[in-house]
Image 1 (tube, helix red, strand yellow):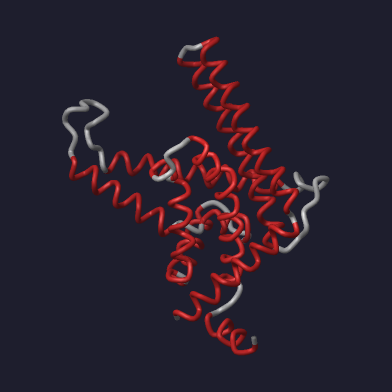
Image 2: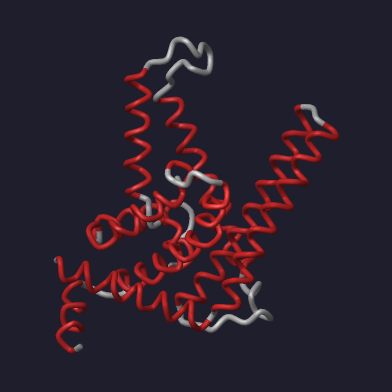
Length: 245
């Protein structure tokens, strides 16, 4: 088991370095593009909120930001799927295929929203009605359940863009994958959680931006390669490959 953990993660990092080498310019442009996209959309949303205000306007702005988020992640899913398949990405084809993932992402985000809503209803702490009467026991239980769910469904995004699954099947397939490859995937899961919660250890704004727009894309590429290795082979097959190497 230990040898398989080392082998699969080492192989994923090797493929990551090859990906960076073959697509260095495109990756740099993509990172800068994502930063510019988020920066501009945030300015637009804040400007609209300040200019018009009002509850209905805020709803429209939130809907606008939601659509932009879906478009951004459908583009990321398309790019990652082609990178993991070993394609050399060109600037001309960088936006190719993003529409395919848009419907899958809408279902994915909606199910995630329903889960969060159910979690809030089950573990109602009372803080919404009275901030001074919080049931800390329920709050801790909610945090634990949320953490467990994040781990169990940690590979859901990779499942979304690397398999033909859609809707609830994304989560069930991802959970089965995680249960089957728990130890091999554990480092990738922890790495992503640390990157997503970078405000805990990244003290400066510059460091947080570097984590979000440089380190995070690299982590997703590594995870994509690792998912492909684990999902397309058994431990016995990988042991055979190690002996052949």
